[in-house]
Image (tube, rainbow, N blue to C red):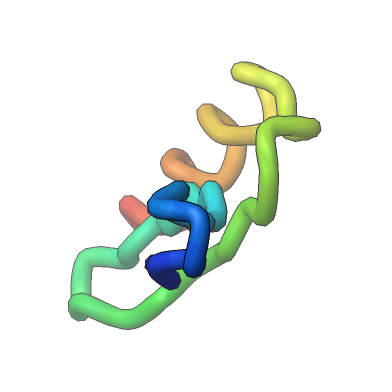
Length: 47
């Protein structure tokens, strides 16, 4: 998060899937991913 001179705040959007060992499985940047993609990564992370 970055504060701008005009008082607005810039931020990014990331969704991170963490595996059972606490490691990052996948990082989705922005909001262009689908529910099916997220579910697939979550299933992989559970193995």
